[in-house]
Image (cartoon, rainbow, N blue to C red; front, side):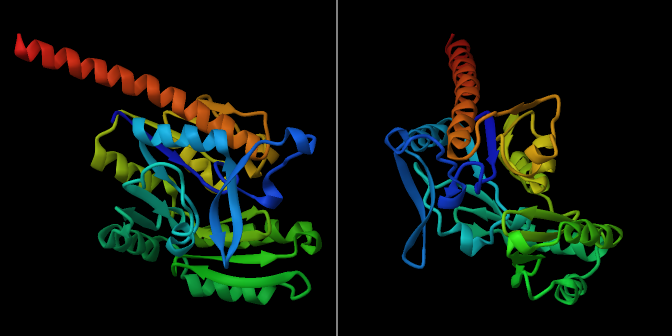
Length: 286
């Protein structure tokens, strides 16, 4: 394989019912495939067309799901096609190899965070002290690496995220608002660092990436080519880059467009690499 495809999952490739964005007449809505069940209920979807495209993408690339989800949350997802050999969870804090966390990578990440950032408990204490019970639903830590709040978005003061960001920045942490969740994440905890590790292990020539949130910005910047949908944090601030393609569609339709674009680019590179290998083999026999 000559191409590594690192894609965010939620609101990039897969969508909850609330995020589908099916604003067309019911009779024209796409057929959907459920790829995640939680507590006995369907939770996340992609279109059937996207499912077929994704299965082909897995065949022509090193496909690496790249998510802020914990390992446990990621394991609920059943994507089409063969299970990826590599997956990145906890925003880069966990690197799964054949479905199991790589302990050496995790230890390296924790050592980096200990040297560069304020402790997780300090951040969690600040979150608990400043979050208003009127809009706070849950406060959680993920993999003992970062923290997040689940909030009533309609009641959340517009100033809270900005104030939290100002407090977190000098302590080496970043803040991101995604749907009903406010994430507080150490700055060195990045998806791009984990993708660079996978690239080194696989020896690929090109990295393609897709994502929708501020936590995906480093991933998109580090890729050779990148895509983002017409919704999400990055769209809200008009984020762009020279090698970035902005997909105008929103919701699950954007996910289908993105996986199609990733597949087309991957197929071209795969065919080129296959042709080069055949020519090299022919020269060797000659």
